[in-house]
Image 1: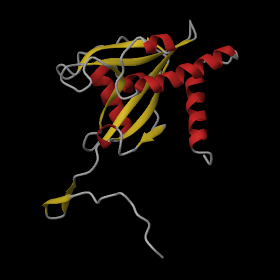
Image 2: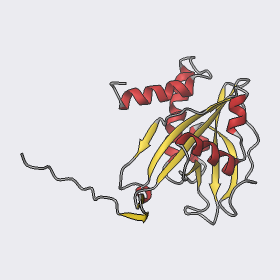
Image 3: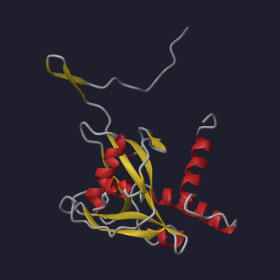
Length: 205
């Protein structure tokens, strides 16, 4: 039997001390789709930030995102990045029943042609409150501004975006519009969107 061709190359490795090996491999990143539902108006807002001069795509907007650190789980990386970039303590909100941070991502982007060959885990974070965001915890010039943006097409199109994050928000906005037209829009709509998305990508789930 012939071996089919593959494009992979093994990751370089360095043994720094006996028994301890470091791998030079693709970076793991996380993206937080933080969406808050407003009960009074039955609307949804997404947490977005403007990138500063110390990072690439300066002046463009994006969802909260960043790299996985040593000794850190993916969900904990989401909590840390939201705290650093937006000043919002998800752990505290979770303890109050105002936030849900799932233990697993809703989507993983692993296409090697994508941004810097990152492997990116996308998480859906649901909030029932909109704490005032702040850039106070961010690294200098990393985040210029952070705000809650209504998840509607006109608001999304009004901003320049990095990493294709506008596409993620447009998918959500279109689903919310469909739900509103059917009279089904409610606090569970975000969850229904991702359940539908997962079922379409993983029909055996």
